[in-house]
Length: 503
Image (tube, rainbow, N blue to C red):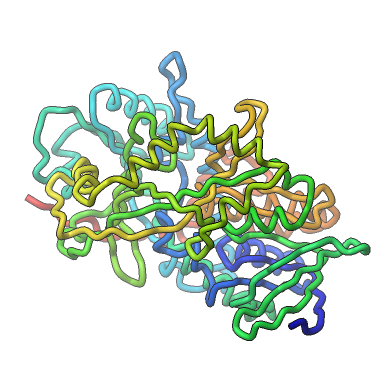
């Protein structure tokens, strides 16, 4: 059944952290614009942004070893770590602006200070971690990082991980106290609640079925109300596809040439969650280890303190799983229906090149609970099976495309904005570091899609994000200033309770 047609300035597809961020930015920059949000689920932040569907790490490259690589001469390349850190600082500045201007309240509901640590075993890894520490700690963005291989010091930092640890194998860790745990589900809902107060039309249980260009240059969307079964047509000058794993199919439906020859490969995540409050109490950090040889970057193991629903939680993972679904709530046919004549060769090439990933996923799927517990015991030697439950986290669709460096069918591990040449439509594809860099990525969308307005908007962007257009790496004083200001505004300056020591 079809009923009527409505027109708006901007349509955002998906009520996750990306759409919520872009909508909030646009409402600050162009308050008179009409914005409509369509989400096929019953509330905001229920897929990738949901607090149980991601690691909740404020990704600033403080602890993630895969953002620093070893060069052939043994030195450590920190350029990617610096880039990721700068992008997270942009998010912090925007969140601080929103709190200071009462767009959102109670920052402790979505962000908490938490030490970020890297942990390694074995002499070679210990040497690498020391060199990594020396390279990072000399940089203004990573000041305050500590390194230790002394068991006594490590017992202070991570008592749970050192309890019952036997053997002579060298271990080491770095620790930096300026890390954060971020509840992206709560933040998403806060932002969308604010947008609703600003008369943004948010429609849940509405699924976008088709989108096409009209002769007058607008985008026309066919949207089904899943509650009533009624289908409506909506037109907009600009469309943003921020539908997580659902973005690829919608990008393909748009028909824009920039969306051709791009494929997606779904990977699901599983986490072990501690059900024993006494164990949870003994750990207070996000501790990232090193991915095993041959494992993909998304498999880096980490033991995470989390703050969810006013409760402290402890998670370990991720373990990879496979489902052909592109969304947790998606269809078993998502993968096969994403293969089109224009991306078939790209997908086939990726299948041949990524045999090791396929083998890794098969091995992960075959793991028993006890085998997963053995991996956890590398971090927590005394972990008891009855204290840990397995939960299925979110689906991530890794981008597959042809690149100059990697050739045909190259699997990408970052986030990527795909936009039409005229800037009338943009889609966000990919995964980590994702939500942590949402503000940086959405500013990229604004720069690409609204070049006519950008010059007039720059003063407001600079008000919201003081470092906009500048390199924090090249301005240590500016970094210190914004880091201190955002820490204060977001309530990250006060000392928080540490882990309880165990004998």
